[in-house]
Length: 402
Image (cartoon, rainbow, N blue to C red):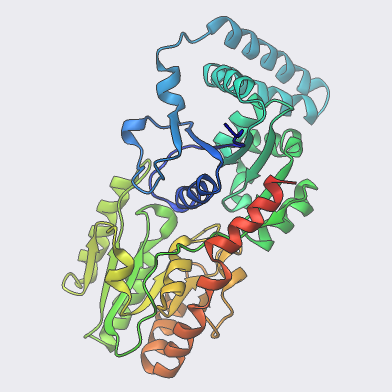
C-alpha cells in the first residue's frame, strides 16, 4: 500500500463560522488529493460540533472528549505553575522576557492535560504537517509540536484585537517564530505582523465555494440581506439603524438577516437584536431568521448584500455574496480583508466601520443607480474564478510541500 502523507488540522470549534468553512473546504480538497487528513477540535466536544460540511474521509477528534477521562496530571501541572510563578517574580527584578516566559508557562500549566495528549499525538504522527487555526489552538499546538512536524499557523482575525492580552503578545513574540510558515488573510495583517513582531509570512485568501449558484440576471427582489453568525462582532445594530432610515425613503424594501447565535453571550445578543428591531417599528420590514443550508439559492436574486461587522479577517459571507453576483456593501474593517478584494464602486462598496449614515447612503445609491448595481454584480462575480478552490489549494500546496 502506498504511503499517504498526513495533514492534521487543529481548530477550537466547528460552529459553521468563517475559519471552520475554510477548514471544511481545504480538508475536503486535500483528502481528494490522497492525503490522510485529521481534524482535532481543541475546545469542543464532538456532540456539539457542526460537521455537516466535513468530508467523510476526514478523521475528526475532540480533545475535550479525549482528555475527559484522563487524570488532571496535577503534579506536572503544579510544577509548571510553580516555575511560572518564580519567573513572574523574577520579571519584577529583571525584564519583560521573564514575564513573557512566566505567562506562557502559566498557560502550559492550565492546559497541561491537553498539551500532554497532543504531545503524544504528535509523537505518533511525527511526520504529519500540522495546520493550526485561531489563537488558543495555536498556543496549544506551539507547546506540543515536535521538530519533525511541519507547522503552519493560519492567522484568522484582526491582530490589533490581541494587543490587550499580555499572554497573547507573549506567544506572538516568543513562540510564533517557531512556525515553518504563517498564513495571513490580508496584506494589512501581514504588514502588522512584520512591523510589530518582525514575523514574515504570506497571504492566502479564503477560497470561494465551488457549488454556488450562477449570477442572477434580471429584476431583483426589493430585499437587502446579511447572513452571518449572530454575535456582537457583526454589529447588526448598525445595519438595522441604516435600514430604518432607508425604509422611510423606500418603504417597499425589506431587510433579511439570516444566522444562528453562536458563542458566549450570543443568545443574549440575539435577544438584544430582536429588541432593536422592535424599537424601529419595522417589524414587518425586518426579518430575523435562522441560518439556511441553501442560503445562496435563497438570496441570489436579492437587491444587495450588506455586511456591518466591526472587525473581520476575511468574511466568507462577503466573498460568497460577491461570487453569487449580489451587489455588495461591506464595512472597511481594520484587518483589511474587505479592502483586499473590494475595489470601491468597481466590484463592491466600502463604508467606514460604525457609520450608519454612510451605510444608508450606500444602500440608497444602489437603489437609485441600477447601472451601478449591475456593474458591481457582474464585476463582483468574477471573484469566484480568482479565489476558486483550485487556485487557493494550489497556494496551500506550495507551502505544504515546501
